[in-house]
Length: 293
View 1 (cartoon, rainbow, N blue to C red):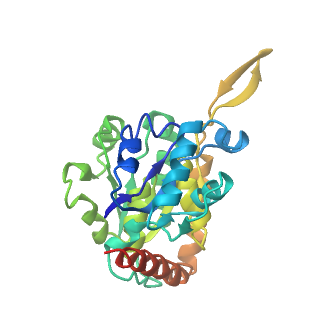
View 2 (view 1 turned 60 degrees about the vertical axis):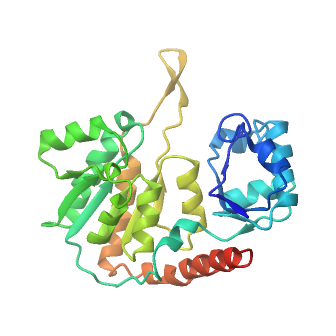
């Protein structure tokens, strides 16, 4: 038995992400799919997934028939699987939530240490970053605010060095880098892995959704703790000519700060309401895995 852990469902996955997928499926070795996930954009939703190749759909249907179990990490992936005619997938949440023991959220916790996780394409998010930092500094005066870098990100590193902002390049420690999230009181940022790691440790966490992965978490969790901050082009008329522009105002970050300020006033009492859902995800993934080993 082997596992497709966090199977990346993509439009041309048989060519790009899994070029030997056909050989694996024809090998006869039993397998299971754990927490499959999509990264669906608005354009893909608008075209009703027609950009997924016939070969990809065919292979997913073969996986559907042959897998011992097939779980998805969120509601959008589950919707996609059902939309293309798969029958076995079951939404059990992200397996990454099972890396840590039962998350317990303490209400009214004083926020002394804050981590901002870095964005992909940082040059497009400078206003969001500035709005986040300024809003957090105002909301939690005296708190230590630092950036956690999940990958090489010279733009953010230079920004931190220039403004004397603490910064940890956690990606350099491949084994224990995410453990830094255990030592903070609040995470706010762009990285899904940071969001999931913080929540699984019972740490308050808020996400700016950069892509379909972030959107899926926002749709799946029972409490709203994220805001869309996609940088998809918008067609506007400039001087009589249609052109693509991006929103650089940082308004999504300001919306998120307004939510955090209100939650802080209420002692972050929405987070204990997530505990049952997170435990259910952990238990259901555990039960599925134990059923085949």
